[in-house]
Image (cartoon, rainbow, N blue to C red):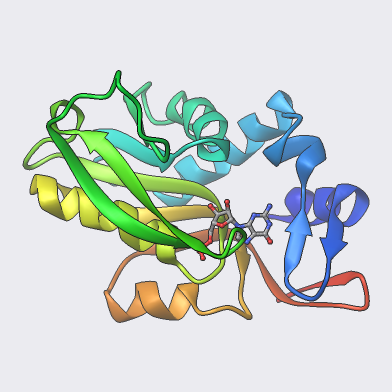
Length: 190
Ligand code: 5GP
């Protein structure tokens, strides 16, 4: 997605050789008009597929998925929770995810009410690094007996293991841009 490449080049900030920060439009401040373009592009990538729900993970996935939903016929958006809370039902699907950015494990949970057997689920998220978040979300889908239609990612870091891991599980991965490397403060696209 050419516009996304330009946006990353003008607004992205690099941290070390493996982290891209896009806080100005995706991870802190939200560029709603631009997220709408991203939503449209995801709808194109998954055109013709039956999608009953979009599943994502808090926090940054929520805005992406909510805006994208409007291009998938306003299907419900479910976000997996990372933080344990007294408000969450006790009856949950849960999976362990290793966080690349925080270098620790955490548990993701979705109430059993909101993922059902036979539903067709599209997973959307902001970044793909080593694929742990996407695999954790897929585990929730499997526990529910639902079907994973695919995984849509805004920015894939192609130099990490995520895409390979999803391919090995025959998951339909659609990344809007793929980074080949981050070197000397610069992003190189595939
Ligand atoms: P994975 O589970 O694929 O290893 O990592 C994906 C998750 O880690 C994403 O949901 C995202 O929140 C975070 N992440 C990984 N790499 C980056 C990065 O370079 N920049 C930002 N902003 N988040 C990242």
